[in-house]
Image 1 (cartoon, rainbow, N blue to C red):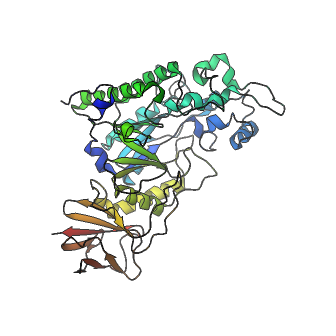
Image 2 (cartoon, one colour):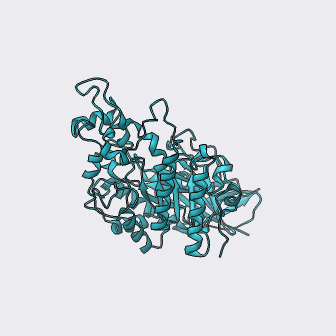
Image 3 (cartoon, rainbow, N blue to C red):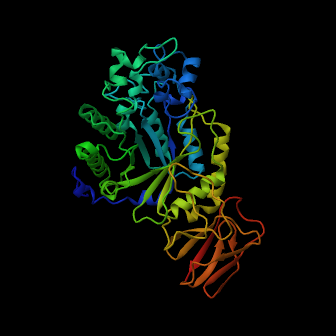
Length: 472
């Protein structure tokens, strides 16, 4: 059995990323909760209390003023009456996902499981169901590693707007329901935070203790294989003491359960001093080259919560993102949006089925692969700028690489129209054979280090095709 960790950077720097995380490459995330009820996008619990915002206007015209009908009342409307974790997990597995992550709690302070520390949870309010427990049972049927995400650390200051009131109109000066003492435990006693003082992570010591208690509860109930914080390691103002205790507690729980540390903790601070206690997570963006340490991109098919206004990424765009990410030692976690009743829509289902047909062809170059000596060749690159995830205008000279042993997988980001693939990255190698995944061996020539491959007219997939280049 591995030695236990203690709550210090020095101890946690001994963390090693487990092989399962390096092998799975593609996961699906259920970023779902009461904020899906209006079907009007992310951060609804915050923006419904911001006078003049689009979600505030929707809320007052659809449900009523937040002094009379607040977020607690939205929570009561969430029923998840058609939620079928088994059916969705079967679809996600067919789509190629090999790990699954459920939202334990978002910034709205609503827990998707039966909590002993928060009465606003999915068993006692709304669905009357242990959402996280149902997800875990479904994932276990496919031996898929199961993760949880906590967005709680950022919740205390994020939600200060529920203490406000309208400045104009018929309800000017009328306090929102976040001021109701009966619900202070849910809405927080967070009057110290204002628009001018709302750091992502609060310095409130009582809340920090509460966060640690809640996170330990999640670990104790579900023993997740992955735990994600929607923040950096909490909390910088206390020297990360609470975060270090949570992570060491988490890893030690995994050692006690498995005999070794199977756990992955992800956070968003790119400073190696912080992220080396676990795995770096990049939200809706990517990294420019091969990274020494495995990392994760978390992204979504559309918005973070179901939004009737949102457009979706196309299957080819998602696949191209995945290929670029894994070529750089990364893993992709994709959020699939659920309606409040628990279902997904036809466009999402079609997208997942399309991705599954691609995995039928290209899986060998994805699962359990590792970065090659270079991540790719060609001039086209993803745009790395905040949360931009624009499609790339790939050209026929653009490739991304992975490898297993002496096999290098060359993903053609744009198959050449003349069906002559030309690769320049094998000048140091002797190529034994070339196989087009989903088709079979194809003719090739290697002259002056340049590898030229003849492709069939009809390629195995309409999406990113892959050459398996076997080296001597």
